[in-house]
Image (tube, rainbow, N blue to C red):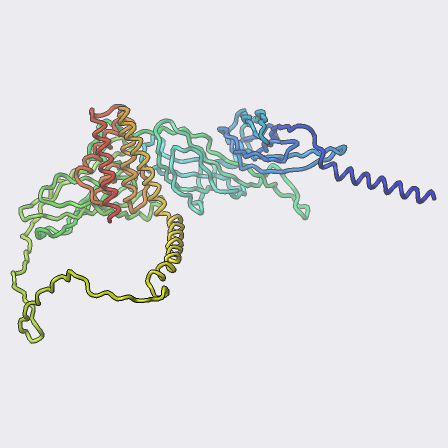
Length: 595
């Protein structure tokens, strides 16, 4: 009896406990709490800490971007959730973690933020992280430096630079990832797959190095910042551990090396003493020219090849401009580049401009002259080369023609055929009428009604498939984007013209011309990188007239004067220029669609 009673009590207690455990998940603590922390609170340059945001009593994870703090780098967030039950009370906890790496010493405040959870806002307090200098023993093991010209850089210049990792000869290390760059005032060439390796002596000490040779293109003037970081895994000789067999060995540690924040002076090419023939060529070049033939007949083409040999921004320079050429038809040049195999960056070589020119009559005796100007960034001077007109012998052209003949129709034996009979007159009255009983299935209307829906479905399927194919066509999407951008900037230009804002109008007009010309560019260059000469050449290739060429040159000159000199070159009728801009854009677009 006592045993049975005890069993019944035990069963009742177990059932009650099970009910409590099953219902405990429905009991929550009151309210949501948010907190932030960083561990450890003090690190050295190159080391990492964990920044954590804790959300208690919620499982809803808000969308969070990594914090933005100059001198610190945050990785993408990680997420961890857990549930604790204490005294039948359920408590959910969500942890959002960011790995933060210190690039420079200092005291950093990771800013707070406001989170929105289930319609309510919660505040995250700021957190302080202290970063001390890298330990002196580590600084003697390795360093990361950027080797570049120690002078001001210029917009449009192709700047050779080398990111170099130096390691003491007795240090064993491996890369923890690819180098990373921060700073949006520069465009950089792609990283090479494998760095260049070797040894060098610095300050009387021997180092091994790994180097990445890159090309920097400044795109913004002023004092600009640039910083590189590189993760590294190394064996620390000051910290020992034992392997599986108990043998001592250096412990492997991770660090992130940085070049520090580099301040670089970026300028526009000087406006003072800038020659009219300057087409954004920056570097050192030697110029030569050659004719394919010295004797040619009128109407036959001859090729004038201008070659530029040296080191500089071959990709961005414009073609040398030919002088006045009466009696010659001159076509835009074809370009090609032969890189110097000894320069891995591709900054050295020879660029060829091949002009096709045709003498219109035998009175022509001189080939057009041309002028080339470039800016030397090391000497900070412009250099101009002028090639005088060269003599050429033009012979009279060969003229051919057909004598007028009276062609008459003949038969197979050669006898002349009689002229065709006169046409019969039009019948003005209908003939007799008769009734006919035709079943519907034998009529055209019946089959047209049956096949029309099928044809409609087929046309719809073809249209949908074509639309999907066009969406996957990068060229089509690029043209569509450029068309939309040109239309938007045209609207901005017209609005600026109506309000009388001349600088805004010519800046928008220049962007409109660049985006319209980019639609015609087979090399798929970015619109903002097209200089005046390139835009004019693209319009000429697409059939643009002299009015468009003159208008394009005027817009670029006034826009550049407004941007670089701070004032417009001349007073103009903005409304008239806005109408001309729309007319030119619509005309060149229609011609391009027809072609």
